[in-house]
Length: 278
Image 1 (cartoon, rainbow, N blue to C red):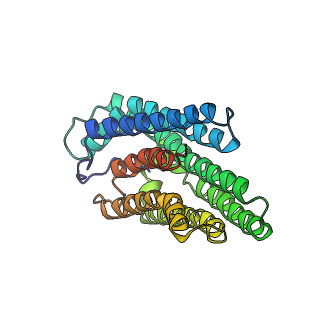
Image 2 (spheres, one colour):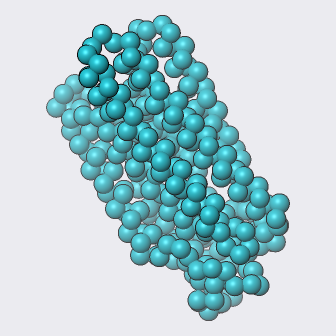
Image 3 (cartoon, rainbow, N blue to C red):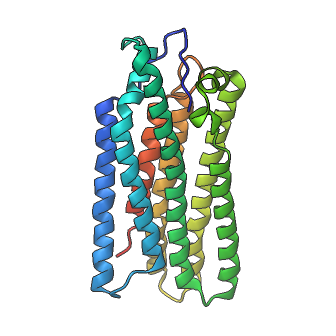
């Protein structure tokens, strides 16, 4: 998300710096504990790791790196936003370097966000593939869901407005502040959130199809469906993130980026915890 040196005062950050950093690290720690429990159970049980385990370890590493990046760059983000809100003094020798640091961190955070979620979705798909590999109709459905998931990921990383993150200062402070660019950014955020929710829902239906045709008691069927349906938590998080980003806007029309990056850092950690299976 770009930030120009606007003439009118902007609203202050909605999320405080302390809350921003503290909550991000807390969720990384909680998801790390969950991941550790998962790995311990693997070595106590089958005594091996599966592909879906690796596809959960990878996004946790991305979440850890994202937290470290924000630990370094959040000061720059808050400095820029506080200057624009009239809460900090504009220093020419600091403003532009801080803007560049922030946008570089934003690019990393955005790409890592989409990649982490994609990896977690693949982990679910690999796990369900193992369970339903011998069911012919399930394999056809599985490949369809995989195709939609991969396509959604490519679309999400492909529609990022890269020039407003790594472009020239003139592009970032002038071109990226036009109504057209702001509307484009808003539209892509909504579209990517919709793709995230849609693919989560499609993946969540896979275990329902498996369990529904299993010869076990209805009570167990419902219990298993309920367990696998915990993914609804990540869907709720994605919806809340999209709503907050759309509702918390600054006077120039740009979303409040503290909510945007806060939600983007937390959602993968929540997905990792939801994905835990002993």
